[in-house]
Length: 165
Image (cartoon, rainbow, N blue to C red; front, side, top):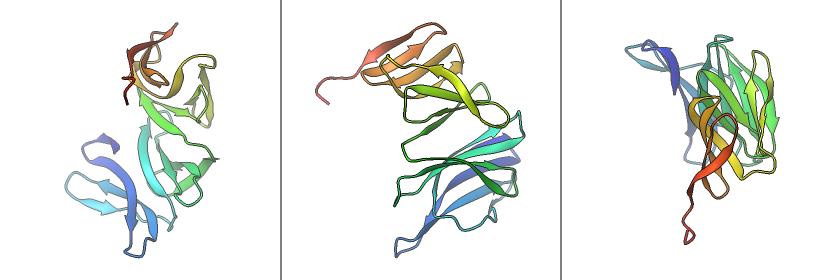
């Protein structure tokens, strides 16, 4: 879920029939009621939605169970536009109203008005994916050996995974 006011909140997910058929759904909250947004039937499980104040649009991420594809969409409150498709796992994050993408590699990309551009390359580190935190120079990561912290200069594992898990 994400939104810009208590009267504009969007949530994403999927609806599934008893036979297993499913489609992605977007719900809108107007401050009083939740209503389903009319979009084309897409065989996708929407997983995340983030408001992008730079473009006044929402960026969404979804995946297709059967193919393993991961898809990024722009949503302008009326229609969806696919902007990227990946075969490997991806992760969307939002830090300081900026949207970031990890494409399954050791790189993080930042969405800059029209596309994802390289923000940080952690090749050769323990970086394993995801980011969350306060700013571009103060965020946490999911490292291969635990939880990492980036301070603007160094990425350090601050909490090691237990070895018996």
